[in-house]
Amino acid sequence: MESIAIPNPLVTAEWLNTHLEAPNLIVLDATIPKAVATNAKGKSEEQIPHARFFDLKQKFSDASGEFPNTFPSEAQFVLEAQNLGINNDSAIVVYDDEGIYSSARVWWLFKAFGYDKVAVLDGGLPEWIKSGFAVEPKTVYNGPKGNFKATYRPQYMKFFEDMLKESKEGVQTIIDARLESRFKGLAVEPRAGLRSGSIPNSVNLPYTDLLENGVFKDVESLKALFAALAKPEDGITFSCGSGITACILALGAELSGYNHISVYDGSWTEWGSLTEA
Picture (cartoon, one colour):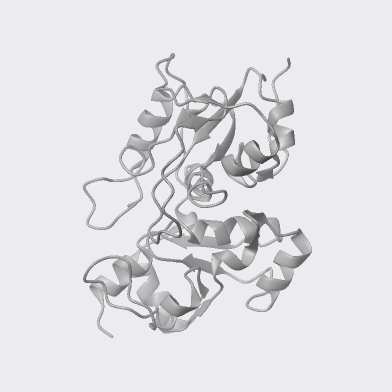
């Protein structure tokens, strides 16, 4: 089988199954625990064949950071990507076992480090299994190192000082991906001791509004959701609880033709900790 290219930021289970044996394909399992548990099921012990575990919490975040999922250094990201055997010609497909959750964060990390040959599996592992495709027991990658290199794109990530400016001056549209009850400060935050509320001058688009039965809604439906809040040429910064589901909005926005988008890394966990109501 010949090497493949990534056709779109979002690929179907059928597409992935068709190209599963491509020599340059790398499938990454980006599963993490959800910040807000919606059910009591345990993590799957199965994976898509040949998948490699992308340890978002420990190896691809700054684990010494004060807040969860802190953006890693370029050197750390390159080292850990190489340890997973990722090369500069790799076609990467990322999934998680929730459907669409942490996989979008991995897609965004690669883009932030200058790599666009990456896509999210629409519907993740549940959709793969629902489609009747094969799975295998989870394994640990111990193959050769890759030659992956990164080039950090600073416009993709925003940090606390950026957000102070954006919130005060309105230079970007800030869109929060959390559920409406959390955005309005009506629900207790899942992280102990974190106050409720939202970033001043931000608006709300729950990431769940982009999904239906665990997969993305059609592009026209996505465009309508974003059009109610911003124009395609507007600058947008996405926020959430800790920088995970904001990336789902970033993926939906890119699918909808928005190009001037960024993600607030610390999101509400940082903002709510460093500011007062």
